[in-house]
Image 1 (cartoon, protein in one colour):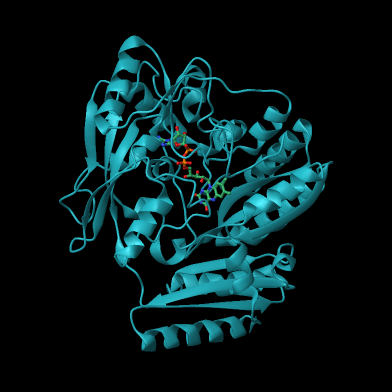
Image 2: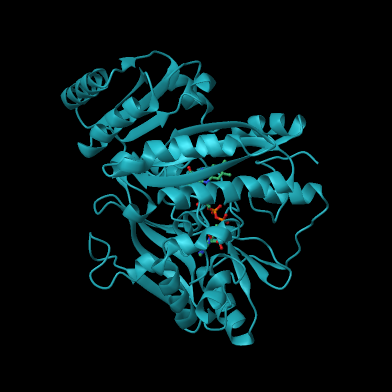
Length: 444
Ligand SMILES: Cc1cc2nc3c(=O)[nH]c(=O)nc-3n(C[C@H](O)[C@H](O)[C@H](O)COP(=O)(O)OP(=O)(O)OC[C@H]3O[C@@H](n4cnc5c(N)ncnc54)[C@H](O)[C@@H]3O)c2cc1C
């Protein structure tokens, strides 16, 4: 069977392991419910909790960690029927949109009117608004414009026994005025409530955007420049490409890509000048054509995957994060340890989300298509992350895949489990996803 990330056989999500299981004959089975109104979605949640049944909420199915895996005993709640834009206010700068709308369709709608969400994940054409919120998504513009949590003003959520509730605030520009309960839903992976619509911040499209690429002798020098740029907020996008990945863009050494946006030309010139001087301070120099090669291939994962599948290989990506003092070590250790797993053909890395206090890392592992290789890779990554004291995920979430590392969530998971018990005591919502270890932890 050939994989296709654009014509994925429904109702599969995009966990690379699932594709291998499908190749071995596994066929997911679940009853699918597809509400067309927010009220209908809320009634399904209510009925499931009253009848002792369970549902797996599902948006675009683009998660890569088994977060909405169809299981026979639970109905799949397909939220893509909730795709409407409910309200747009260009004075107060917000949009109220149903949760099943694809991020791309909302972005396109806004762009036509001169506005943007500023949230641009690589999966922008696949992911929904609700799925992005439930998975704590992060886009490429995180350094300048923030992540999904920075644009959520309020959420309308169906919670068992409570019905439809609004969390956050549509009257405060801050998006909340008291206890931060809306934040409980952000990153909850479908376990605490079904998001049916969201009020999101929007901003006018920038007047001036320019991009640059710099080559550095090594990852550490590119990292030092990126750190400084993030501290002073000069760029909306920063991306460090490790020497292991630079050849993809026809370059050598480490690379730093940057995008700058401003409302005026003078400000643009001064920010670019600052970036040029910053790069040269750390031994970097401007390189032409590299940003353009990255930019034109950034959404082209489909053909790449087909090629790998065709030659008997498969690929997964591991997103991690760390404070600056540990980023370079985490990068090196992951490359070294993962390369030595038997069956791994290649490891590449970059850092795509950069903050004043640290960065995420993204390792791409090309490996033979074997289940034991797959799990060895993931267990090795968990050990490295645990040993260094880093974060086991940054934007892809936990799902079923990262169960073996759930202890790294620490007290956050214990509190999540208590909230789960309080909001959903009958375990109607996604019992096989992120919450699935809660009972064991509670008992232990
Ligand atoms: C090629 C590729 C590139 C990617 N790039 C990025 C990236 O740049 N940044 C990033 O953050 N992620 C990325 N991802 C991962 C994925 O796109 C995100 O996790 C995305 O946010 C999932 O959204 P979805 O609508 O597809 O959710 P789904 O996969 O359908 O569901 C994900 C989880 O959210 C829950 N859920 C879905 N909708 C709702 C709802 N309305 N209410 C409550 N719970 C809900 C589900 O139960 C499940 O637990 C990428 C994935 C792929 C395949």
